[in-house]
Image (cartoon, rainbow, N blue to C red; front, side, top):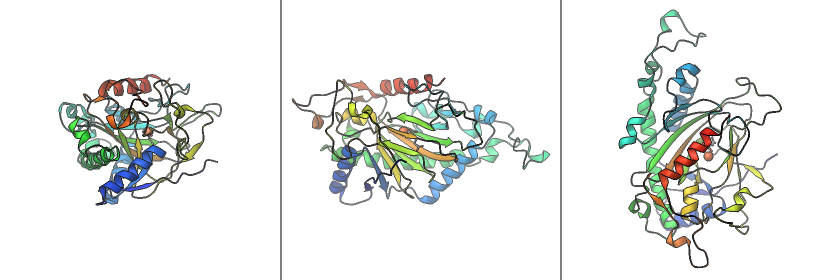
Length: 352
Ligand SMILES: O=C(O)CCC(=O)C(=O)O
Ligand SMILES: [Fe+2]
């Protein structure tokens, strides 16, 4: 059975920003993961977001499909995505709903239950009388959009503060990521996730099915809220300060065998923060975007991820503080939007 890892805890509200930045640096080098506390999002708000997310996922599939993924936002049913694009599985056993940026051109792309599905729920026959058959989804989820926007803004704010601490952790000015246009108008995605429990989905014994297959996140940092149902696991090659083997343009130890998966436990009131691939590229593999996955446990599981990604037009290239003559850049510069597009397309086209 997998062991549980003890991750560092970072207090984002501490007035000693330098010491916080040093702790973040150590956590990002050793684990690429940490718990974040005092992030400014109350437990009540988080609980309400979980409750409303559950309400959405418990709608009949055909209602959810009316808000099907367009571009990067909206609903994706089970098996639509395969986070491990190299795997042969038919896709991940999870359904998701994505909300993209709330400002600028992209904001108009978002899909909302109150707008996209004008008519009829009514299949929840268990409770339904003839009078309730034609209830609009907007009436079932009346404050859904407002709530999700509120949460989005708050978690974006925590992400911005964290990115300024990360800049300090990399010996840069704390507004560095703003100055280069990465976190000034970041490309943030709120992702509601539901991993169905046993009984809802028939899976044959011979099939390997993951809730979320092994992957590292694509962007800068992810702020993840979990509901207490276990399942999240990660591989921490660097935890005991093993030599970092870097090969061609990949931080090779990410794919090193054998893989030892460790459980990442839920800690009430915290966010689980993990480093994404673009941060790994910026830091020339100093900060690790750690492989992780979600195993099905037979229980329904809900989580809420916020991907704090650089502005699409930002060029991600090795930071001066992370390279030298003896440690040259391992990755060519890339435009953030192009990199994300390639990774997202691979994940959605590799489900069978
Ligand atoms: O649900 C979780 O705990 C993790 C989700 C995740 O890794 C992702 O969506 O990238
Ligand atoms: Fe992830």
